[in-house]
Length: 353
Image (cartoon, rainbow, N blue to C red; front, side):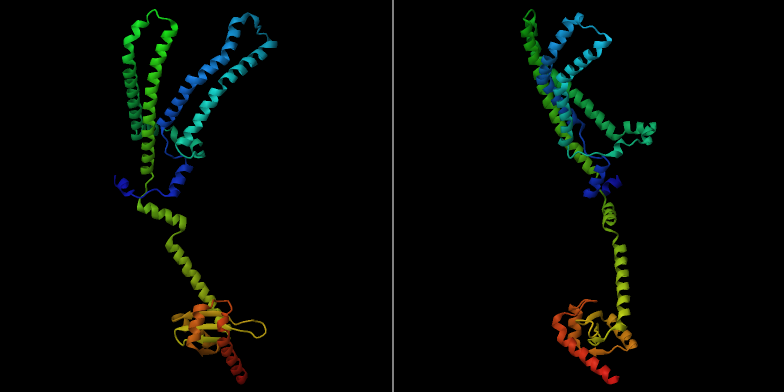
């Protein structure tokens, strides 16, 4: 009960799709019974008469001319083939109708699915103890109660429909066969209509009940939703750790490139941008490293140790940090300011030389 109370979340699409892949879907046995009952009514009311008209002449020939058929080895096969083809031709519409209604049942209850796990043999199902448990389980008892209640209701409806019509049956004594057949057909038709309405109502009720029961059974707890999200999207802690490792590796590569820079533009303490330019080989200066606060101080320390010139230009340092990307040329709007700084550094290097 405690576990059931915790399952307050609607099932996710993934859980529903996994259940469908295993063949666990909402199905209504009453819906199958109702559809097949309709099929039998159609067969009995329409196709049954047509089938009899198709098979009648063949049966008359077989019965009336039985002496003419010699079941010898030479003609027995042809005789059997002819009878089988005639029977198949007469029953083909009925078989096609039943097959069509069987497929209709799948589409009426939802999108059909094919699950190989249902047809895979499982030796655990051969255990008699678990079999008895399934037979005496709650779902089995509910299905038995539904079947028994349906049986009682069908018998009750049939009695209520037939009983008023039994009053005039004594007048049919000595009547013509056609009159008796019409009276019997009226009783049977009224009973079939009433039972069909009952079966349809039970099918609609059971269909709603089964879908609601399946949805409640598929509900998940909040922890299950979180675990599924972790499995599909990845654990946030692991993703954060991977992102942190990536940032650390990028910083190490960036710091390794600082000694190769031509100049460091600083704020002077909050921002630092390392620029590399080789005359004749580069069309524009490239940003090899940038950072703020602690990273900016580390860039300055590495640059000092490597002898890279450090130029203080707060506006340019902030602008390059905000707009420039590492390992990419500087934006064109900063060409003039950076060219002046690199020119100054190159002139200073010549004087030192």
